[in-house]
Image (cartoon, rainbow, N blue to C red; front, top):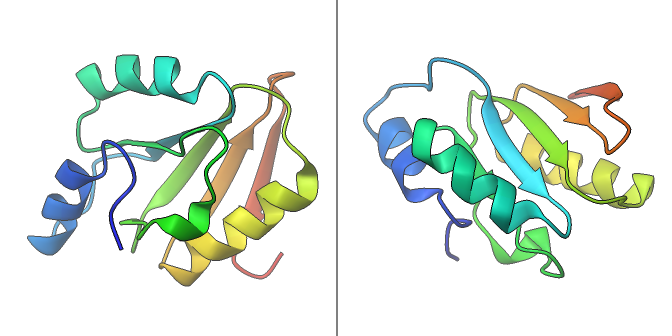
Length: 112
């Protein structure tokens, strides 16, 4: 399985036994590419993208020990986001904060 777009620097960091110095930005939705590409410039080890229309199950998510800031760039079904959050938890994510398109935040803990 491959890592998601922009995931190689984060994977390398984790393989060195280090964690990012802040939350990992994970962009989802129709504008994920545009937003994620800009983010990767200033946060190369803290940016991930789920390409629009692709299943998160296609990727190996390098998030073990990380907090995730999931940024919704277009409206996405709540059940889809919750299933994705569970997948990220299965890869070792600690906490996930979703910023939805209305700029409201929703926090997911491992046992939500």
